[in-house]
Length: 171
Image 1 (cartoon, rainbow, N blue to C red):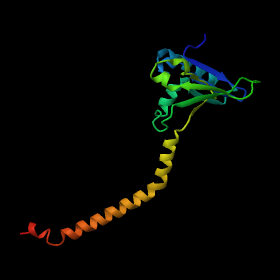
Image 2: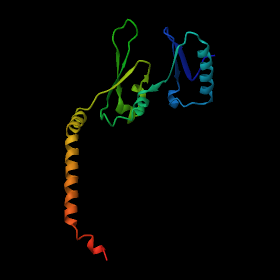
Image 3: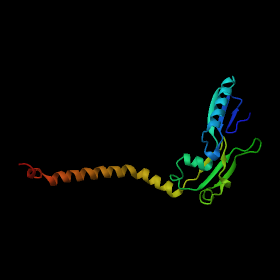
Image 4: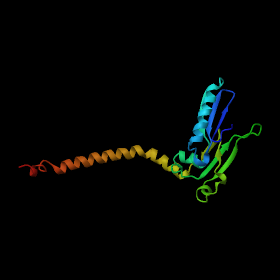
């Protein structure tokens, strides 16, 4: 009986991949999936040529981006997938992702299903990269100035309070 919620494959090197395959539910585990995983693990354990077990999940571009924490740190919507081409066809296939159409227009045409060996690329925004570079360069100077300012203000406060400050609270 073929599994409905998982895919299992073993390559020539003995690496078995168990892939959770319920992308519409973001691989939510239900009773059917638990039974299929249990049966698959029993079958994998019985295979003498299986040396390594990888458990992965099939996910879409948006699911992968949400796992990374979104696009805030990149501020770029220039996204693409590099997918290995079939044997004999040369280099990678480049699949552009229309992030705005997916997120604003609910057009799922470019919300590709990520496959094993796919690489998801997000182009950096040049202004964000420049801002980060400036922050790295000026961060230590800013900390040094902050410490010096704190020390100066603290010594001024001690000096202005003086010895007579606490005398009015004494009896």
